[in-house]
Amino acid sequence: MGDSSDDEYLGMEWIPYSERPEWSDVAPLPQDDGPNPVVSIAYSQKFREVFDYMRAIIACGEKSQRALDLTTDALRLNPANYTVWQYRRDILRELKADLNVELNYLSEVIGQNSKNYQVWHHRRVIVEMLNDASNELELTENALINDGDAKNYHAWQHRQWAIRTFNLYDAELSFVDRLIGEDQRNNSAWNQRFFVIKHYGFSPNLVDQELIYAMNRIRIIKNNESAWNYLVGVIRQSKYGYGLLNNHPAVVEFAEELYQAGNRSPYLMAFLIDLYQEQALQQDISDREQKARKVYGLCDDMSNKHDVIRRKYWQYVANHLKDQLNKSSEQAMA
Image (cartoon, rainbow, N blue to C red):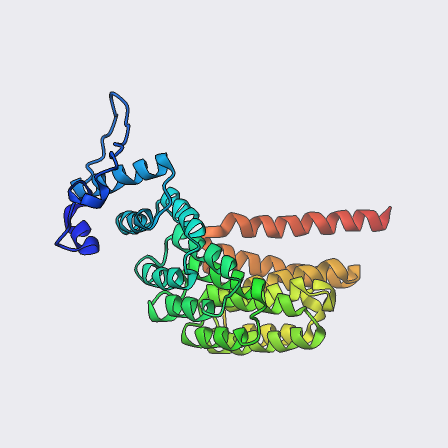
């Protein structure tokens, strides 16, 4: 990190540790890159000095307030340094520090480094030590909404951990619905909805509710991969209907009506291919050929018009169904 960035974090009136009387008893420990480093990193003088003192403190095992302050400076310069975060936790435990103050500090750091794994991990450990997640939903909401990145993986993972660990499910569907309403293609929000529904269990009423929800969203944006994936995921994961598309007639009717109305979304067509494959393999031999022809026709359209980049995959799907039907016919004749 260069000097200009260091000044931004640590202030223009920086006093080197080597000039601070309270640090006169510590001999800095330089980084050992060996006698012939292949690529020597051009650390700024400020960066080099802070971490030379950090190494010295870790080496002697000092856990004091000044050591804690040193970790703050080091983490401002490199917030992804796992060793410094770990040592900071050791200091906090040793000093029996006020962990709520640490949470306030972390809120500031996360605001500046919301995609840094080490920061979120440290936050989780502190929340576990406090056994209090009362601030975590607001924190992650700020990271997802106010910071302008509603797909921040680290924020979602932390939110899921807090909800699962401290049983904070109650208002989550409303929160997720708001995010989906703002961006219906936000796959992270759809994933979070599935996370909550899975916790409640796939009861028949809940499955029907979620299928209606997904279909209503698809009606607004037909070519929404996230909504189609959610629709299929709810059906496949639920014991209600045995995980089969064909056992949900309202969804079957919905999809076929979209297709008959001229919609050629590749996600709709992929759904119909899966549906007709199920039907072809389940129905009597006399009805199989009709369903199989639908699969072959849809796969051909996907290969040549609507999903050309996966042409070989759709050719494989069609050929695989042919093989399955041939084997089934041979077994029936045996």
